[in-house]
Length: 204
Image 1 (tube, rainbow, N blue to C red):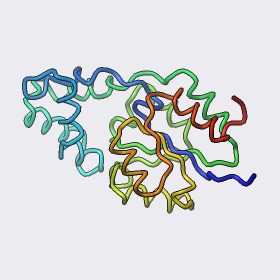
Image 2 (image 1 turned 180 degrees about the vertical axis):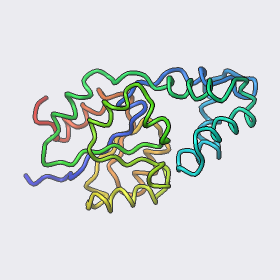
Image 3 (image 1 turned 120 degrees about the vertical axis):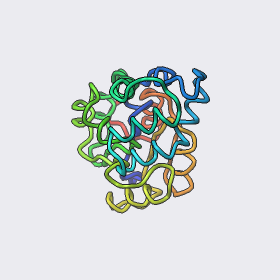
């Protein structure tokens, strides 16, 4: 049968890298509530500007601390941000290596230059993906149609020939609306199962 998928995209945090407790970034506005901090982070125009590459790490940290009364130094806040992402999930490298070599593999992540360069696993993640679609380089963010359009155009693929894995529901919804085969997953094991079901792995 002819192959129906030309490319597979992976988000990084929560799919390739394990995520720590977001409350370690806070408290934000006096609260340690994880769901509230998560929502503040996702909706923050400061995070948005940083992950689009519009402001540098120093300005990002200073504005976050002032706006959300985080109560630490900018340096300490940046350290917390770096530590928030943990180790690679088990079998990440094996899963990516097992994908049909005729299928293009890339990462698609909302992230910043500071985190991309300084995370403890940055070199390993960089080696896993020769194709990297990163918000701070593209100047666009998931779940905007613009970032999915840029990715599809640079891959030279029709949207309906791209599989995408992300751990954030609204990113998955946006990708689906654009035409990707998008799946919400928690870790690489979920993604591996779907890849196997789609016949995209050389071994089970």
